[in-house]
Image (cartoon, rainbow, N blue to C red):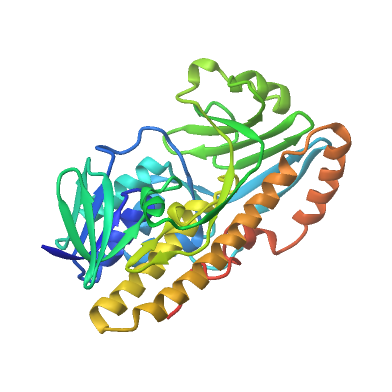
Length: 374
C-alpha cells in the first residue's frame, strides 16, 4: 500500500503533523522507534501561537485544562527582584504560557490522532534506509518496506533520517551545564514562574500540573539540586519531594537545507536550539503547520512541490535561526557568574524589563513566521 505521507518519529511535532494531515484526509503512516511514551519530562512551555495551532485541531481547550497557565514571571538578580514579565495584556485569546509536561502533550495528541481514520501509528519500528523512487520514497525497516509520496523526518535532534540523507549541519556547543528536577511544590509561588540570576549561577522555577514544580539549575558537576537552590534563592526544598532528575548541556544545530527530494525535515530534525527559553518545540509546531498545508496543496491540488519546498525552507530556517538566537542571547546573559558581572546583568535586565516588547517576545508572538499564512 502506498501512503500519501510517512512520518518518521512520534514526538510532539510528528504527532501534531500527523493530526493536521489526517484532518485534511491524507493517508498517513507514523513510524516510531519507541514502544511507549517517554517517562522523562522534557519540554513544558507551550506559547500562544502554538495554542492557536492546537485550536485548529480542536485541542487548545483540552491542553489548557490539563496544564498550568503562567501569566506572570518574576526575575530576581544579585540586588533583589529586578522586575517581571506579565502576559496578561498580550494580544490574542491565550494571554499566558501554558506549562504542560511533554509526556502529557504527546498523550493528548496521540488520543486525538487515534480518532483519525486515515492515520496509522506503528511503534517499535526504526527506519533503516531510504530509497528515492520516481513516484516517491521507500522507507526500509527491519520488519518491512513502506512506500509514500513524501516522507517527513520528525525523529529529533539526533535524526537518523537526516544522517541517511547526508544533509550537512553546523553544530555549536555552548559549554554550560544544567540539572533539572521536578518536585512536589510546597512553595508559595503558585502559578508564577521565577528566574534567579545569581553570582553562583542561574536557577529557573516553573509550575507544573498536579501540584508540582520544575527547578532548573546551572551547575558544573553537581547533580544535587536542593543545596544549590537553597544557596542561590533561599528556597528550602525537601529531597524527599524530588520526583526525577536529569542533566543536560545546551547546544545548537543548523541544517544546510531542510529537504532532499521528497524527504522533508521538521522540528528538532531540522533545527536544534537551547531549551532555555522554551523555543524549540514551539518552533517545531509551526514547522508542522506549514508542512501540513504544503503537503496537502501538493498532493490534493497538484501544486508545484519544488516551489513549496523552497518557501518552506526559507520561512522555517528564518524562524528557527531567530528563535535560536533569542534562546542563545537569553541563556548567554543568564549564565554570567561573579559579582561584578551580576551587577552589570542586573542593570541590563532592569532596563530590558521596562520595554513593552518583552512579553510578546517571550510569548513568541514577535517571531517571524510563527504561524503559516496562506
